[in-house]
Amino acid sequence: PRIEIKQLDKLASKAAEVVDVTLDEPMLKLASKFLAADHDSDSTQFQDLVKNLKGVYVKSFEFDKPGEYSDADIEAVRSQLKSSAWSKMVGVQSKHDNELSEVYLMTEGATEKILGLAIIAAEPKELTVVNIVGPIDINKLSALEGKMGIPHMDLQKNQQAKPSTGGQDEKK
Image (cartoon, rainbow, N blue to C red; front, side):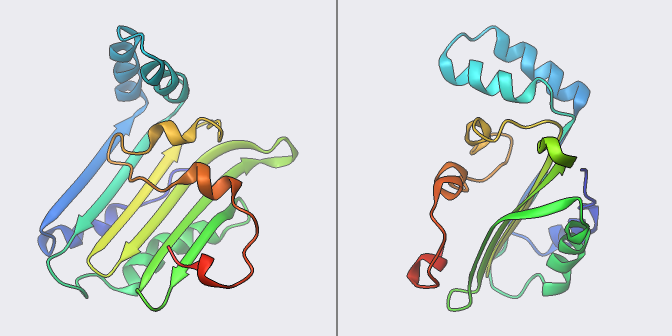
């Protein structure tokens, strides 16, 4: 479930702001221990979610002007998600605003146990790729939004969304 996102490092020289998060399993376990000392419900929920993860990897770039990254940069990530192991859970594209948001899950056979998650969020002046590796409880996933460099993606809302009719709901 780990995808290669190092090829995006070349964009750092063009970006005004860069977020690069690499948390492997030992670092996540250490973070979980720090959270164990805090007993509020958010910390407990966050700790429950990360305790079995194998890694969290984020690359996020904010640019001063549009056109600093290419479709080929996105396709280099996307091509890894086209295998039968990955399924697209959310796909939102706005040609008018030139924005794209996609959420992919890797599941284990018939059990549908989630083994990994990948998020691609692209706007004219921003590109973010998130890869979470390990068993994930989709109902608790929203606890990661806004933490460890993971953007707010309204995953809970998207999960509960009704099928689109092709109208204005397609926009972000």
